[in-house]
Length: 384
Image 1 (cartoon, one colour):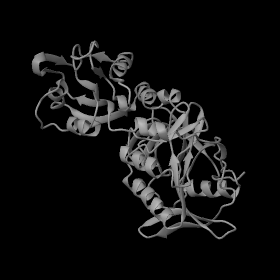
Image 2 (cartoon, helix red, strand yellow):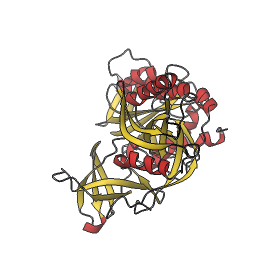
Image 3 (cartoon, one colour):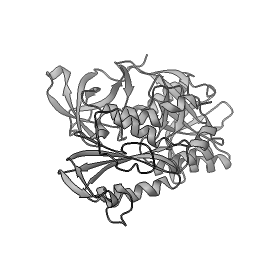
Image 4 (cartoon, helix red, strand yellow):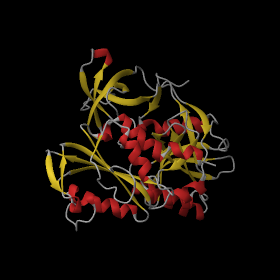
């Protein structure tokens, strides 16, 4: 088995000051906190929790700003590859060893092949002399049994899909390989919660492209991976669920304890802290979330009055054909939260749709597992 790294070290996550750096408490340095380069700029909210195990190596680049470079992270005791520098190497190895179902006749002849305004990761060929333009994507957004891509908006990725479809119509063989870095993944979908435009484009072009999503197994020493399975794709489910409607969470920070006027509710008391609001939109969900982000607007909902005093932390859409709003509120109530009685629930039987915490929920494992349940785990029963 091919060895990718000479010596793999481990550390525990402390903070992420920016997209490309994490601070880790290194195990071999008795917990000394050091910066490490993170070559994967994805959001990774679902992985980055305090004290989670990271896998790192000494940075190979002379004069690098950090001594260490991240190669992986652990979830539920399973190592996950984060080093996107090796994505093309992994793809080429799996193709050359005939591990990808249906692609046994192809071999890699060139890296980073440019056609028009797009540069594609791999150029493949076969014994008949045909050309196959392949884009490679690393997927690190998982649930118990599924995987979705992307975990952040990627307009570049959407344009690549359209260009691949166009080139297919011109006679090229084109496709995408999603490297799902989670051996437990059984199904794969485009993440319509995070990037609806990408998901809808993918659903449109999927039938024209030769694409695969494969679940990979990694070991703690990160020798070259093994394919576990090809993930199932349910296009009908994407069409059903991937619409601009559903439910959402808005996470806000109130810097000081305040008494505030909340429309017809009158004066209400709010402790300083982080607040999560549960809402829904039967249509135009994206516009609703953009409205919540703005401070200057006509005040209408309870949240409008509260929002003008808060810092916006995040909006979390949960696109669904089902009405999950009150289920979300009940789930939020089960976390380590306090509720603001009567807030945002005038048209249902809930006691509140606004919940407070002393911590930022986006960096809290219980909160993110709740999001995972409503976004992904519930799909297990719907996948056909």
